[in-house]
Structures are given as C-alpha cells and as structure tokens.
Length: 253
Ligand SMILES: N[C@@H](CCC(=O)N[C@@H](CS)C(=O)NCC(=O)O)C(=O)O
Image (tube, rainbow, N blue to C red; front, side):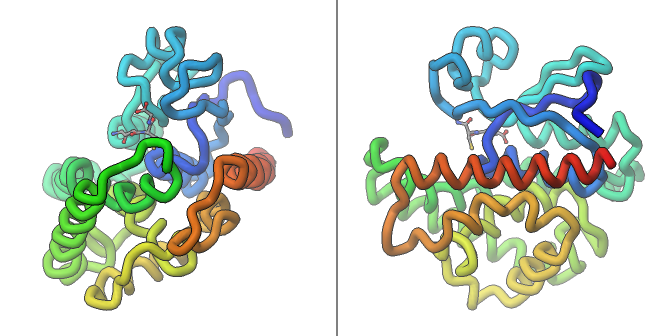
C-alpha cells in the first residue's frame, strides 16, 4: 500500500535526536507517517529556518508535525508525543492515571536541560563549523553525568524503565539522547559507572522499532576518533531514510 493523503507528516531528518523519538513512537505503535526531509538550521527551501517553515513552526526546529486529520501544526518532540498518545488513546506508553502520567511528564520536562546535554558531546564532532568551545563540552558532560546519576540512583533503581516497569514516551525521549553515545554508535561516553543505565540501554535496544530508528547511527559508526564529514552524515541520513520508508511500507501492509 502507498502513503495515504491523510497520514501524519513529520518534518525532520533521522540524525536528529528528538525526530528519532517521534519516529520511534510512531513505529512502535505502527502508525504510518510521511517524513519530509527538513534540514535543521537551514534557511534554504527545505530548511527549518526558512520563512515558510517559520510561519508555521516559529521555533524553527525539527521535529514538527502536520496532522491532516485535525489541521494541527505542532513542534517540540515532548509536545508531539503526548499529542499523538492522547489522540490515539495510547495509554500503554502515556498512562492516563494522574500519578502515572505525572511521572512520565516529570521526566519529559527534566529531559531538556539535562539528558538533552548528551547531544552537547555529539555536536562538536559533527558541527566543526560551529567551533564549540571546550568549556561548553565540559559543561555538557558534567550535566549529562549528573542526569545519568539521577537515572541510576532513582528512576532505574525503582523500575525497569524510567517511569515504572513499562516503556513510555519518557524512555523514547531519553534513549535517543543517551543511547547515541554507546560504543555501538558514536562511542562518546563510558557507561561503566552506571549498571542500571546499562541494563536499561539493553532493554531499550530490545524494544520494537529501535533498529529502524537508529539505522542512521549504525551507518555513521564510531566518531570518537574521527569526526565524520558532511557528505558522510548526509549519506547516513539518506540510507536511514530508505530503511525507514521500507519499514513504513511494511507497516502500511
Ligand atoms: N526541544 C526541541 C529541540 C529541537 C531541536 O533542537 N532540534 C534541532 C535538531 S536536533 C534543530 O532543529 N536545530 C536547528 C535550529 O535550532 O536552528 C525538541 O525536543 O523538539
């Protein structure tokens, strides 16, 4: 079956962490969508800082979605995932009991200035042009380490996943950041001081959709010694998109 007119539209690229979180939720719940390649930060025709894009999504970031069924335009992964769960009744990954939902929301909000800093270790490798100062990288590493300690000592000592014993959208959001640093991908962080986090990383890797969403990182490989050039990143994104489209064709049946 081909892509339907009424499918959710997702703007982004597979290399973007928050885009991967939304992709993963959709694949996990077998919701087909259309991915429109949108270059983060670019003012070009297909860029997230293009005036047409900004008119709809003023934050100028990916991911953004358009829901043709409701007409809704929405940015921010941690707004998009709850929206999709609410709309589709996916209470397994976003529970509706107030206290259970609050635990998920807590981690979704905690994410932004904490776990998100994992990308502060990746950005200097892939955006040499930004010339990110050493001090910023050191701060990102320290912030991330404190966030991992919170995961280790509190959330992941109480349950198998971050908000309890079942996977939720908080795990998708967190893993796309933390997971990218593992030896099997970029290899930019040593997780050995965190056994609970390592267990969780393994559980997340066994969660449906993981490999489909992380194809881009598998293609990019270890970047700890040598930073990839833009052509390599573009080709990894392209290959990942082809793999994603194959998966979506399978979901559409
Ligand atoms: N808080 C946002 C972060 C989105 C974000 O920073 N996206 C990056 C790509 S990973 C982006 O679009 N950067 C381009 C820019 O800021 O111009 C979310 O979770 O959706």
